[in-house]
Length: 226
Image (cartoon, rainbow, N blue to C red):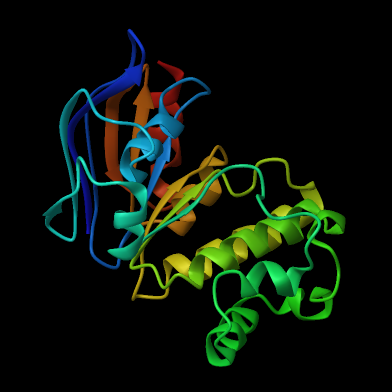
């Protein structure tokens, strides 16, 4: 569904990614893990089209989108939820959702997925908790009807007592069977429970990959300790 093949990219003369290859299968879910500065967010920016590649190819549904603008990738089914629970803080939860869609059936669908937002529709988004804003950010992206969803550290900055709630939401998305998911996450246990396979990045290079699940925790931690 989404393939980054031999991708190298960076900022100015500073290269961050070095010949990285990552594949998100159709209706599958993968996790990208690594320490801060390993190149995870840079990889996502390349996938979305926010950062041009120096070398390599980006394929979406088999189409070469390496030089395509982000808007074109969205139209072809790519959804992106960046770090930081992004929303329009002066607008209500309902208004944030209606920026993407005013179709009642579509709005009802995302509220079924995120029932916690139902009682918050008239509250300004800036007054929501971090966990609530994260759910709003994901819900808004789902309204674009993505076939591939990219989540950049969805539990970052979330209160500990709400992390499990966000984890449950993300896991339900990765298990839907009609959505491909690329998840960047620092919590190794959660990332492996939520996905089918994983990649470990170190200094912009893929240093390890394998099948997900609880049995892979030791392998991932060992790879990240190098």
